[in-house]
Length: 257
Image 1 (spheres, one colour):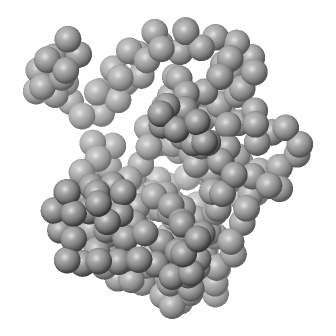
Image 2 (spheres, helix red, strand yellow; image 1 turned 45 degrees about the horizontal axis):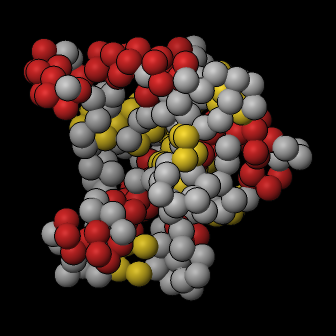
């Protein structure tokens, strides 16, 4: 039934209102997970458990919030932004690619944040922009967030150079990407152009590479100073489990001198 009404909803409900509607509809899901074992900082709610992303894989440790749909990486990033940065305490102009609803809603409420959400497709974006060809002048942003975006970009080197260009000296950015730590170097196959080919080569139809352990070096080649943080491992005992965080999700903190 939901599938049959989705096209109708899209035709009559404005893009940003769809996110609100989707959130309201998830109340029914959230009620089935009532409890106090785990906590989602993105929506500030407790549950008996999160939902395993791949329910067919008992080894999968990427868990989804029953209410706001945040994944492990989002909750990790949320905690880092609140506890390891001054994002919520100082004036900052923030560039955010592919904005997630819970971040978008929170950042827009912050009086100290001049928030610029952008994307090629998202209805939450203020502007439809290509990350590899940004229209902003040099050094205009204090910070950026680029969460699981670069693995979708054919010319990720150009995108990284653009991120560096628009960041102020002394500014910082956070990137997250899926990394296969069994690979020393990133795997790319630009002959894979169809959905079927990319699914076979990269495991997802909209991915164009599989990053290896050389990912920080790729950021450094664009000019950044890069710090790789296993931030979940730094948290106090038990917090990783309570937040439902993955074991090998790193934050790549990018700085410009």
